[in-house]
Length: 245
View 1 (cartoon, rainbow, N blue to C red):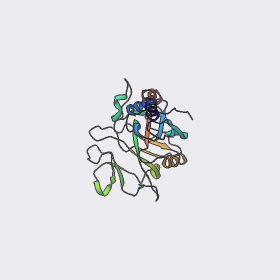
View 2 (view 1 turned 90 degrees about the vertical axis):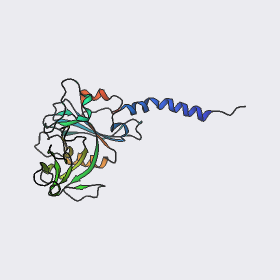
View 3 (view 1 turned 45 degrees about the horizontal axis):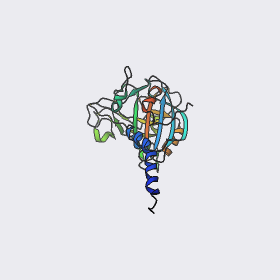
């Protein structure tokens, strides 16, 4: 009698079962395709100044997303949403593409970086903002879209002193792919939402309890997704379901 081939058949069965999910994950845009934690920011339209924020996680890139927090409401750009330069191929006719100074939050998928703030913190990789910490938006500077210090770049380079806006008392860096040649925007953060504000210059702003929850949620490889609702179907199978607050 020949030995049973159950293990081989089981392996084949599992491959056939998971193949569609694996193929779908591989077709999703990076860095979303390999992410295990997600902060999803969904605006109703391209001109919305508020958005729904939800947190998700999954066991593996081929596993389904599970809701882990939210929904909450965030402020986004004063002028709404525009496709990031790196994701402009997803734009349809008439949809805006982000450029420097347009006060739009960028649509696309971006790795979330280090936590930052004014106070001392023991968060891993934390960036403490001090007088002279500067995010460069000067299109003529090689330091464009980087965070440095005024002593490093000198007095003539245009940039934002991050110690002065109170919104930066707490936040997270966003790995936003832009350079001075693309002129596609700079200094994109998740930061504190203050009372009385009606929009941002291109960032995502959250009330402090929700911002702390996002800081607690993210880890290496966590991704920020920013999209208007009308674009969600373009990434079907890559994103979790969205719930309105």
